[in-house]
Length: 360
Image 1 (tube, rainbow, N blue to C red):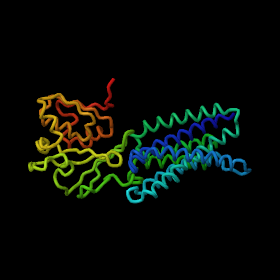
Image 2: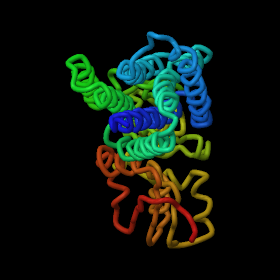
Image 3: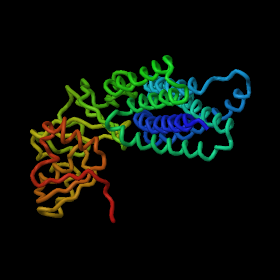
Image 4: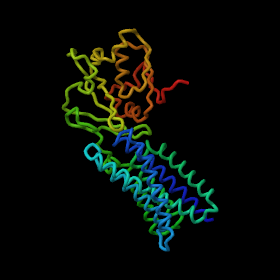
């Protein structure tokens, strides 16, 4: 059997799994983490539809070639990204769900069509073909984990298109049309990696919400396997409005300004201005535990924007250990936001671990 078929089936399977991983991140940032499971039903719809189309269409004398199906899988991945990120679920939820199913299932349809055709055409090698399918899927899932922080979710859609175009070349040979299509896929991946937010920013946008008022400045974005992280500054806002729900209504003293980090759709964590007066933290509800202890050694699980670390230091903690699972958060706190937050992640007596908080 032609080995190019094994390469093709592995590549389209990798492209499909990578696309699925990318969709979970985009759906979590636009629809909410609890609706990322929508990706599973979208994938199953596409796989079943592709198998059905193979059974109905491939019996005919004229049928689409495998290279064309592979290119269609790559093109539909880019198309799905553009459609899914230009519909705002906050105002058009029904439309966004329809788009998620209609556009999100297309790459799976074409990938499934290719796999089923190979299995139908050569059932004697079904075991080896299926092994190539599973191997490609495994590689695709690993590429999603490794590539997300480097390329961002939009870049993963582009990488999925590149893998699909490479599959077309593997089985179709070095034809000019296929080579041009592959070059186009690489160009799309580079563009989506460099300018993903300008081309396909997840809705409802990096500011997430306007409940705090003021003029919104989007400071930074990080993609991480756990979440998309957006740092936002609200200008012309009341000082301390981002965390006033924590404070006693009787407190009238100074309050440091704050930015906010959003994780995916709307999980938020405050980033206090490290140059401000932190004594106001003594009037917050999170100060309550320190009425029971003096000079404690504090463990913070999920420090986020650092307000719990600052609270511990204000109350005289001798040492603060913190565990942050999201490297996108810790990267911003140690990087672009470090000057603003007063380098709280690397302050004297503070150690922040990038890890999962678990007991062994």
